Length: 303
Image (cartoon, rainbow, N blue to C red; front, top):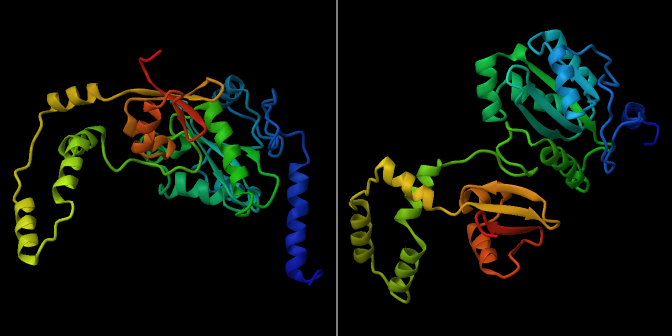
């Protein structure tokens, strides 16, 4: 098996990857940026906009690509990223907004295609590409992951992505922690409607009222029909906005008291950090306000 074609192909891929990685690049866990502004593997000349962006962000990407609308460039990305893994950045050259993500082994081109060609990735990127056209975007490989990604080391890749997310704060990313789900199913106003219709006090009353009761089929049907015929409460936009103002804005600190993020409501924070509202509320009631042994949480206007 050691000298079979399958072994040779796998071993050769590792050698190629090692050659690509055998540069003075900032590999995990080392965390430093280079001050040079040319991509070390595909030495292309950047446009003035790209040079300025990379200089301001102090970035030295491993690969850089412009003119993404050209099939030759798309094919080049496919060839050069084959078998590699790492962290990528998508840049809108007009607005200078950008998106950061990570891809496991041999998935970088898939990520590129999903986001920019098929428009089946980030919804924000999809809308931006439709508005500004693909030719006005650039694609970068910020850093290569040094190993073939497996279930065992995938967390390290997400940590690498998380470093760039928290360092560069990309405004095309809805969430700021790698591995979390993207997108919201409800708008803020929708969440307020649901919250007002089914408050904690009301849930407790319903729970206590029905506790220990046995419902027969006829009774269940009456309850079902009553629920279906319930008059829907319609709140005015002004009323909903007033309720939104009363929602608690909170701030999350890292354990060293550097700011992790600010959120307009507990619900928004729970989505961003993938933590339940109940857990956040419990942490707010404690003296030390530790949340999941990772953050310190406070109401925004609380000293």
